[in-house]
Length: 148
Image 1 (cartoon, rainbow, N blue to C red):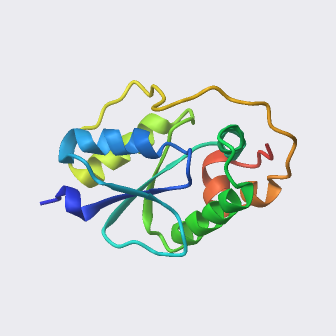
Image 2: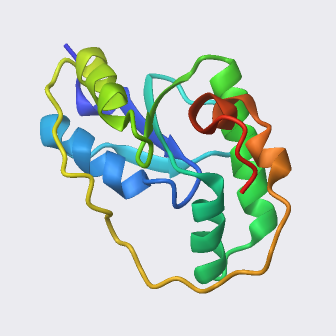
Image 3: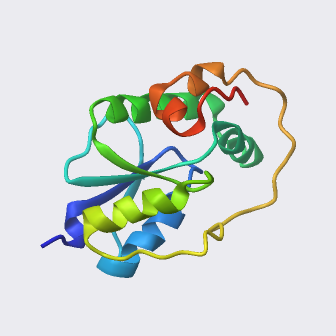
């Protein structure tokens, strides 16, 4: 039987951490959420993903260190290559299919209206080269050949 202590929500900041955490809490109560670092988690790892450009806009709007954002994407990709996380995109046309996969894996029928959680006003950021992020296999899997 799966328990809250078995589940971890790991994410790149501003990809939907709180959103996915709330969805999982429907069935299991609060679960640990944290952000990708060089640490590889154990247990059932659920990770949201969101278009990197939109993530960048949020990081910029919240005055976060953009170099740290790149690091989190690279660590996320490393975990993806190791087949660690169960990934749920929050902004793709097929997101319901991924939510269904999460439901099957965690043995609970998750539902959502996909409303953003803790969303704030955005600033218009300067142009940035995100091609290194868009070329990561984890990003290509969900967003194809976009380049921001």
